[in-house]
Image (cartoon, rainbow, N blue to C red; front, side):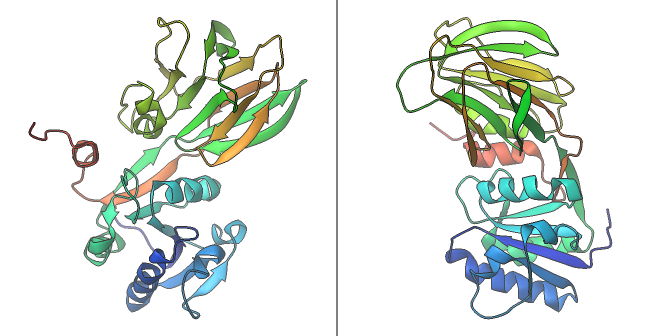
Length: 292
């Protein structure tokens, strides 16, 4: 595939001086290809001296054709949420550990980015979630999530009580540490650790994974991505619970709060090296097929 790339936004792992050298190298590579380079303003602080124009997260999405993220999956999750409404595709360069999303190794950055910028890449569209916290009939908070929306207990070591609804239909009541509502992308994250299934990233689905349920018959459920999932806090006493978005954003909950989760209208688009498939990534990151 080809795309008219003229302006590239560069995003680095926040607070990481290690990323500074790779960011400078990337900017030099892009300028050598006669491309306009725009640095996200927090990323610019990681590089000594002026190397490109700076823009805030609120401004940069309007100017760029593609975003290159240098960091780990957490960095890409944050950038994806901010850029989703601008429909800007993302390329991930890995400075983190696992790198399910940032799958280009930093040491191969020059070799692997060249063909992508020349138009030789594959596009993956990934589902993004949008969640509202509704309290006394009013929406008090709205956030997006690329991996997962998680309702979990607070600092006290006791279970929380909630009900699950699907498209307005009652599913069940649960006593548990919480519940994970994950996209196929997020099925390889916390949901996997909690015993959830691996979903292929192109599957139009959402997975609901209980966290340490009191009743062992409460199992993960896979539903259509067109579904609206609602979690209603039902404790009769004050229970301390939170909702988190991609493990990065956090909001406290109260009894009788309703968390409504649905697919966001615009997906996240990833540009990835041609010829790479999801199972290559799983084998590399999860060490499948190793000899015992």
